[in-house]
Image 1 (tube, rainbow, N blue to C red):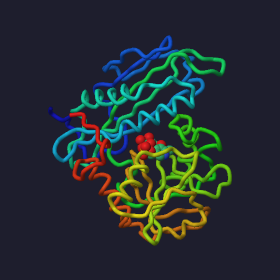
Image 2: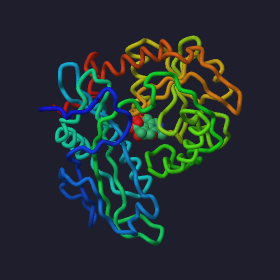
Image 3: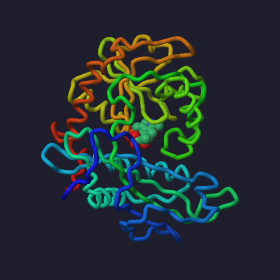
Amino acid sequence: MEKKNIDWSNLGFGYVETEKRYVSNFKDGAWDNGALIDDPMITMSECAGVLQYAQTIFEGLKAYTTEDGHIVTFRPDLNAERMEASAKRLEMPVFPKERFVEAISQVVAANEAYVPPYGSGATLYIRPYMFGMNPVIGVKPATEYQFRAFCTPVGPYFKGGVKPLTIRVSDFDRAAPNGTGHIKAGLNYAMSLHAIVSAHAEGYDENMYLDPGTRTKVEETGGANFLFVTKDGKVVTPKSDSILPSITRRSLLYVAKEYLGLEVEEREVYLSELGDMAECGLCGTAAVISPVGKIVDHGKEICLPAGMTEMGPTTKKLYDTLTGIQMGRIEAPKGWIHVIK
Ligand code: PLP
Ligand code: COI
């Protein structure tokens, strides 16, 4: 298989159109058989449910070329399960887990020429999503849906790669108590756009959102969960019902405990205790683990001792172990690696 002529090492996190996408339609209470298609465009009613009332959910995962030349994905079953939870919360039909994993395999295999080579620093980002398609004008769920998955080769989510980020404590909330913060709904991202544009305009890389109920506890950023390392080497991550249950974060906690022998804690993390942390990272499929060097809370700077020049030592160990597992350099826990070819 000849790879596309792409400057893999200089890719950012952007959309590059690839050749095939997987599509399945839901109508009259059932999903059709689904197929790979060529057309990247979607035609739908001007009154489609997704256009009027934002009835759309998505997932994000990556395909990797391993050291020994296989193409694999990482825990796609967990993306399928999370998409099921998202679908139920937005009154959408569930796309079955086996079909989800099969759709991902098909779309990656069909775009093999776009899977970045081992060692290039790039990966193939896969975006499965589902949206209400038929006309909806009264506020109610659509009755017809499309599930689609496309892929695009990507580099680092944050410009500058592994250089520590500066983030600010946001005055805007990302999620409401008892709202939709725990699912991957497009609406959560639409309402974060103003906050991210204003953070960038003020020179910050991202927002730290606080719990919407009391605004005293750390939640997450617009696209990643937090991981902290305490000064005595414990890995701590915020526990909250209104953050997205990150597959990367769940995997990192396992890696910290079982591979690195570290103490881990999932608990409420107060903004007031961040001065006691040694390291901070943003973790997610797109972000992998992106180190944070400085958190600014309304002019008050919290500088992580790990500094602004490189990843802290524990974050680096976590990063190396996780990416080692994903790229086949380190043996994975059973069931984590889904081999496509
Ligand atoms: N939090 C938010 C809001 C996200 O959008 C994402 C990205 O998927 C994550 C966390 C990280 O989740 P995961 O590790 O499953 O990609
Ligand atoms: C992911 O990490 O897959 C996400 O969906 C985050 C998004 C902000 C790009």
